[in-house]
Image 1 (cartoon, helix red, strand yellow):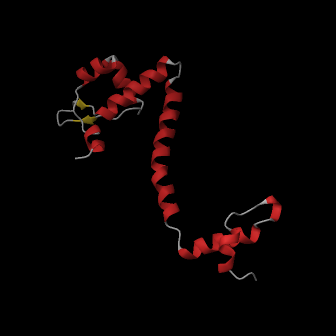
Image 2 (cartoon, helix red, strand yellow):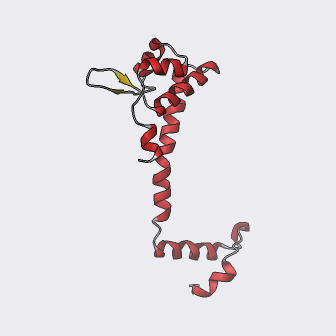
Image 3 (cartoon, one colour):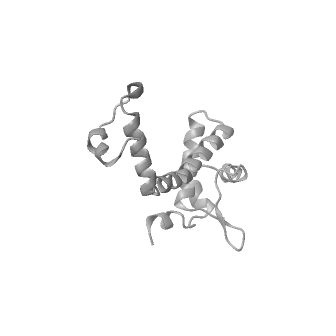
Length: 133
């Protein structure tokens, strides 16, 4: 089991989370109602929080202490989640370049070198592989 799985495992009841975060049960329930934190539920409908949930609650508490309101916190947390989900897609897209696409990019770079103040360090090295038309 890796660290990511361990941190997302629901372990703590609301009483322990209250002690760890110094938040009241009402505050924690309110943040859940607002969609800022989503603890797991047992078959008896008891909330169980993970390390990630506790970290999120501490982050919310810190934002509130710094004067941010709930709407601002929602925006910040939504942006951070969106950024995290976007990263792998961008990385994957960059690694899926075909040889044809790479050659086309290099050809374009070589042809545009010297125009509009653009210079290319690769021009001297790679120009011998391409025929200008």
